[in-house]
Amino acid sequence: MNSLLADIERAQRRRRLKKKIGIAAAVVFIIAAVAAVFILFMTPVGDSDVAVIRVEGTILTGDFSGGGYAGSEYIGGKVRAAADDPFVSAIVLRVNSPGGSPAGAQEIVRDIEYARAKKPVVTSMGDVATSAAYMISAHTDRIYLSPDTMTGSVGVIWLFSDQSEMLENEGEHVEVVKSGEQKDMTYPYRSLTDDELAYAQNLVNDSAEDFIADVTAQRPVNRSEIESARLIRGEEAIAIGLADEVGNLYDAIEGAHTLAAVRSSPGDRPS
Image (cartoon, rainbow, N blue to C red):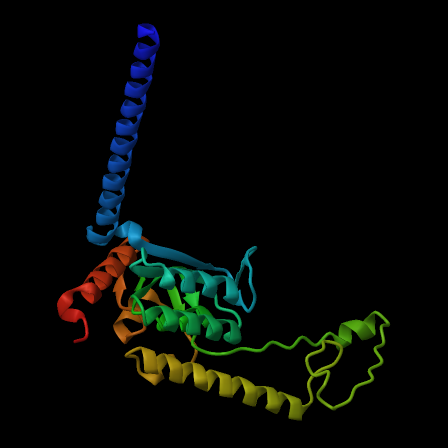
């Protein structure tokens, strides 16, 4: 009987000990969780809190990336995700692109403006950031580049290939059934008529005018500096107002960090 009582007492002690260990473990977990939250929310913003989004290749509309192309939906989705992420304080676009579709760039611009309403967005240009790639860069808070980065090319181009002579030499003949005179004006089996050439030029001019107006609204640059659609070297781009300062990706991250700190300071908050 005494042995049975002793076994019961030992079992009860083990249960009490396990309960105490469980309570202690729970307390430790809670303390660790509170400390983690404190570190995440109270530690000053650092480089790891700046999201870097790469825009590399020709810009087109669509949800894809790679192979020399950057899709507007893919880039825009990353921009919006970073904008909505409470642990991201700023965004850096690392742009290395010759441009691309005006419509694709215009889609990305809307996503950038969405992000800028919430946190700083900065551009870091690589070898080249021209045409449509410059369009999206112009809508960020600050632009960093290298002295020999090629940028600018603020303009629009539309290429038409006339292969009619080659087809004729090869004995190829194309019959066309169409609903309007200009339905096939982009096809290579014939040249453009004078009316089609004038129409195409008007479309290009209208698009270019919108582009130039947009850039001069976003950047402190004179129209005369960019309306020729010329390529502009990084050093000159800073001098005429197309970019802000010389710096690489890490300089841009630090600059974004600084802008985020300024925006989050109490004196910078709206009353």
